Image 1 (spheres, rainbow, N blue to C red):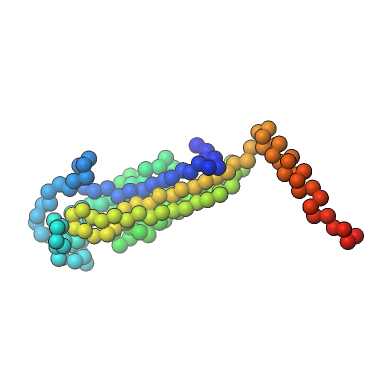
Image 2 (cartoon, rainbow, N blue to C red):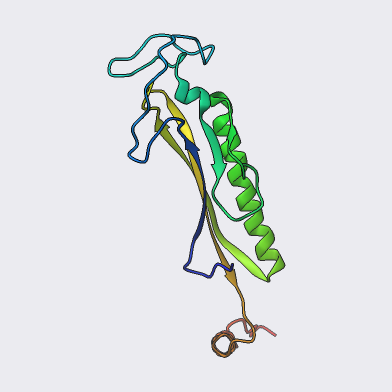
Length: 169
């Protein structure tokens, strides 16, 4: 699939919530009070079902790539919350590297490549976490067989002719 100038292709990677329904509501907590996330705060915030240390949603959060490229996270995988930002950034960098490779193989030029890292708040415990990322790239491919491209080059050549004349000789 080619990306032309003016078109952008985004690749995303998003975290999933265990126990969620299509409406975005969280299933009932097991209420065991067991520490599922060691090192996290055990205090339950007002309006939340559990503390960050006891949060089942944070413990079971998985990341999966939704693009059609061969990159990491093609199957859902769990990442430690402290490593999620690094993992998502590295994953999105794979998409940027693929864009440069694709441009080099097809006589193209990468005009723009950007990565956005997304965050969200856990609905169960209120912890802020990295929820995924999005890579956007723009690649320009030159097409020498296109008659419009040939005309444009001829016009540019005529406009530039004589602009760098050295009259001192």
